[in-house]
Amino acid sequence: MHRGNFQQLLLRHVRDEVGETSIRLDQKLVTFQSHSDHVEVDFVNPSTGDRNIELAKVLIGADGINSTVRKILYPDEDRPLWRGLTVWRGVTPTEKLFLDGRTKILMGNPNELELVVYPVSSNLINWACLARTEDPDVQTSPVTVEWNNIGRVEDLLPLISNMKLAFLDINHLIQSSMIINKFPLTDRDPLPRWTHNRVTLLGDAAHPMYPNGSNGASQAILDARGLVLCFRQHGVTPQGLQAYDDLRRPVANTVVLAARQYGIEELLKIVDERAPCGFQQLSDVIPSAEFEVMMSNFKKVAGLNVQQINQEPPLF
Ligand SMILES: Cc1cc2nc3c(=O)[nH]c(=O)nc-3n(C[C@H](O)[C@H](O)[C@H](O)COP(=O)(O)OP(=O)(O)OC[C@H]3O[C@@H](n4cnc5c(N)ncnc54)[C@H](O)[C@@H]3O)c2cc1C
Image (tube, rainbow, N blue to C red):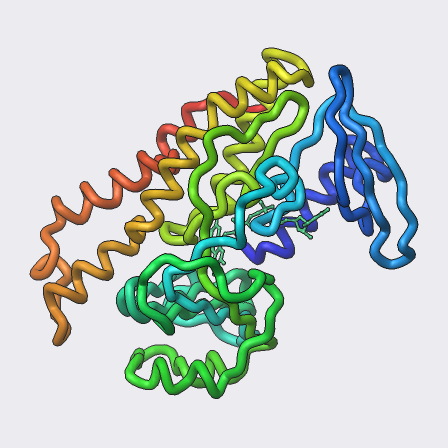
């Protein structure tokens, strides 16, 4: 599903259930003051410059990898960490999807050059290419990570000139993209705590991670579920936020570290190392038992085991 459509669906649902005015756009958090019985949050409207102050029982900072809330809680933390991989990504309209219309392509080696392609609707193909553009020593990101930085097709095409598929013209896919974004692939070190009395972090603000294994947003969704369960048990209170921290932080921090080892994409790395000149059958390179163990190990770490998730009671 296209994430824009998913966000619209969630937006509609929240407005229907909680009320039209429950979500206000154009409100940028500038700072907050935590008091014993409430939080005072200072917003600015970036379009008009108008300021306004809201009082709340708790504040949940879900403001992404460049989180202002996190910056206030951890003022000494620098920009996100970069290990030399750069991402280009885009969305390409198409009249016909490739293969069965439900196939995800992962090709290359996540440590050097990887291409990920999959449909997100009946007429849109999402693609992302990550390439090593610097050596892997850890450094702070050279630029502020903004998802809408523009990339250039002429920088990307030479990097992937050897990537060919019989059923999909990769050059055409990339050249026909509606837009190309480019940014350094970054994460941050796990935090010792997310909850500070009446304030906590959620999603990328709490645990930005490499998207290996298709994680990131999925962990943010699990955070939200955990938060609701903790509020149900402890109320919308500092105790609820602390219970959420105890429940989710150890899991999410483990996923951050596992994603640095490429998550499920480690399979690509192993296959590339064992069969640099290609192969006929995947099982000749990586026995199916080894394949299954790797897949299920990462799903267990990430909490993405389908049977396990489906056994949990619905929230509503
Ligand atoms: C190349 C790539 C591929 C990915 N693929 C996947 C995938 O397949 N599956 C997956 O699960 N995840 C994936 N992710 C990760 C996923 O995109 C993120 O984990 C997810 O978007 C995090 O959601 P979030 O709501 O925490 O943060 P964001 O999506 O960054 O949203 C933060 C929001 O906060 C707002 N904001 C920022 N500052 C302020 C402020 N001061 N005041 C008010 N609002 C503010 C921003 O405008 C934004 O709307 C991928 C990431 C990348 C880079």
